[in-house]
Image (cartoon, rainbow, N blue to C red; front, side, top):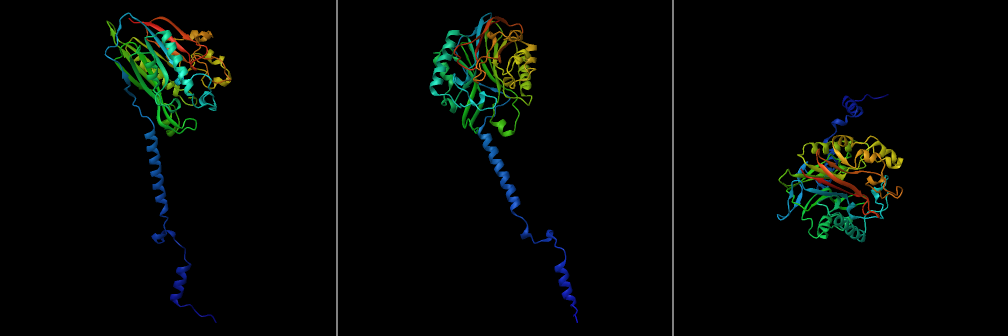
Length: 383
């Protein structure tokens, strides 16, 4: 015969057999590691963000650029003709290379030029400047303290080699980082816009351009494109402003180029005349120029150029008509990509303020090439 279970025994069984409520477990059973892990991750993210910030440059939207100009430098005079040379000198790397960025896939075999190439190209660039004898020199892609070119200041090297003929200089970085963790770079970068002048400069200003789109880390280490503006006092007339720029490339998939062109147009519209601008705009002028490229090279550009508003608003050299003509004399770029193998596009220009008189202009197409860009030369007449 079964014996009954005493009341206190049934109560015990009921308590043991009832549902287990984990929320009422003793506090010692909670997963204490989770908040610690989250705190550690936040600290790691903070450290990495601080490191990225410390390694990269943070220019203001508008700021003073570096300027050196002795008081003894001569001053322009009203009515004077001013010869201007504009040139992307490809950080004096020279010819014979296919750098990793020279191909659309980013798989060019070369990462940096030899010291011998840089020295030879320095001599060639200086030789062109001496031969042309310009009053004002607008240079893009001038390395200053970059590992790939031996951490030299190429602006100082050019200025010194010219023997004091250009006593005034202005410069600003547009790609600068203590260390770029790109597998083809892995080092210090310092790339600048630089302007040399025979005549007195009384100001130099850096104007930031809109940045290329991308994730925050990539954008931080990427180019920070800009316009370098200098002003030259003119005896008996209004001062002359000269601008130099190097706009983005490889910006497909976002509206960076449109925004950069709009920023340049706003700057020029707000500048007192006279002014002249030179630069590597990395944009075609017309649909005809686009159609002349092979499909492989067309991938760099939009068929309807973002440069159109600037071309509609101001006179340029080369002009739309000159580019449309297909005349090789107006081509400014000779790609390093061996699959192209010839000069094939116009992406460098002068832009002129309304009413500014021009006395001649041309593209200087040196053979063999000195840079992957040809120099442009113009002469303007001051009011």
